[in-house]
Image (cartoon, one colour):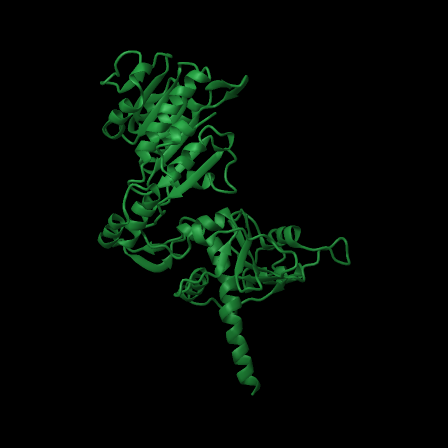
Amino acid sequence: MNQSSDAIQLTRKQANIYAWGWQPKARFRDAVCGRRFGKTFLGAKEMRRAAKLAARWNVSPDDEIWYAAPTFKQAKRVFWRRLKRSIPRSWMDGRPNESECYILLKTGHIIRIVGLDSYDNLRGSGLFFALVDEWADCPYEAWDEVLRPMLSTCKYTIDGVQYVGGHALRIGTPKGFNHCYTTYCDGQPGGEPDHKSWLYTTLDGGNVPQTEIDAAMRKLDPRTFRQEYQGSFENYSGRVHYGFDRRTSVKACPYDAKLPIHIGMDFNINPMSATIFQERLDGEIWQVGEITIMTSNTDEMADEIALRYGKVGFDPTKPNLDHITVYPDPAGAQRRTSAQGKTDISILRGHGFKVIAMESHPLVRDRINLVNAKIQDATGKRTLFVDPSCTESIKCYEQLCYKQDKNKKSTNQPDKEMGMDHLPDATGYYIYTKFAYLPAKRVQTTHMSR
């Protein structure tokens, strides 16, 4: 399909989103964008294209084309007038219906705008294409219970081949780490095979000059500016690992069998968590893997690590684990998860791992500060990087926040109620033990030997 005629008026970033439309690997697209990026203009082009393709691909008139917004009033105010301008009169079968806000085409297809606040009333027809605007403000149930099932039955034919399933584009500015963040992650590497997502700033859209961006930067607090103008997912309750940014902290970090493995481990039973690291020769620290096992014990975790990262040794029945060092939760020296009453640390050593454990817990803030310094220090240098396959770790680094007191002010204790603390804790045990505890022990040993 030649898309150049429809994309010619779009900016480069808008055209990139548009060009991925109707591709098998991008059935569900998510565009997370800053304010005034040009989402509405892009949406009008998408609706016009969907109308043409519905006729060309013999889509049933029962499968409609929808623009959806959080409320019907908002949908009408933002898009109805632009939609009427984008669809040529020669395509229409009569005048647009102003009360219900739909356009009937001569092909029998219907283009309609809807509000998702009353999504239960929208059930009935099928959908060929759905454009969901301000996705972060829409109820996720509207997608999961109504729009997604309506897209499932649409059939169309391209070059004699029949396809099943309508397509969708969800666009908007983020609002913290809600469903907009989840579906954005689905479209990133390692996500869902039929999803594609982008994150663009206001400046990327090409509609707002730098002077306006600078003015907004002076007026807004940093987090609001990042969210509204840079399309950044922000948590307003105080992120623990505030320097972690998937755009700069996440990159390909493949496992290197020639390098030693360093594992941070949290002994919580549900789940047991481990983060897998390798230290590069250039000084970078790469998280190459993660392990979480629900309702587990230390023996199971040890077996899983050996299965994934053990090497062939002289004894073919037993993996060689000499290259693996575990840095566990210090509580493992007293805690017992085995029926035999062994401590967690003794279990790890019994499996053949080298274990370096602190004698007691450091201050939580000291452990967090050291991890944050590895993520990004005061000069802007980043040392710790995470492979895209570590999806749970990435989510936890982004979303772990400090607890709030009764006055809604952040404390200095991470919030453990959401379960986002286990993988970051595991990382903290490795980082603090290796880069603070061990150096301090070496200094003490040197002084004592004198």
